[in-house]
Amino acid sequence: MISNHLLFISGAEIAFILFFVLLIFGADKIPEIARGLGKGMRQIKDATNDIKSEITKTAEKQGLDIDITKDVRKEIDSIKDDIEEFGGSVKRGKF
Image (tube, rainbow, N blue to C red; front, side, top):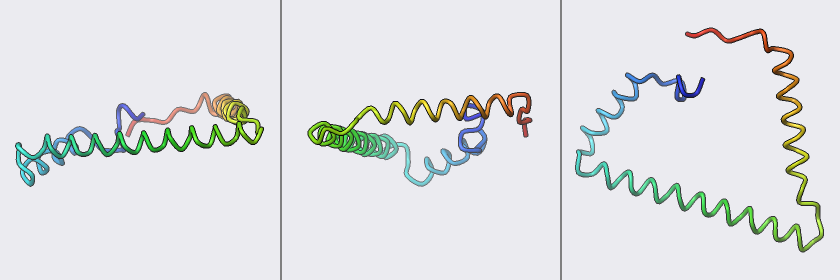
């Protein structure tokens, strides 16, 4: 699954990529790059949360049902259960 195959890249391939990143950028630049990526990801997460809260506030002001996500989640779970029931005995083999 995902823990075994992170985006279908093996451990050796990840190590190979990290080795080239180390060669290209050097050991002193990697922490700065990681810090920048972390800040960027945090900004994206904050912006997403702000958008969600604005949508929720607007829906509440308009008197719309904001519990529709619960209905959607129930439907998704129902479909997952049906699929698991249908294909539960069929397991994907390791490559």
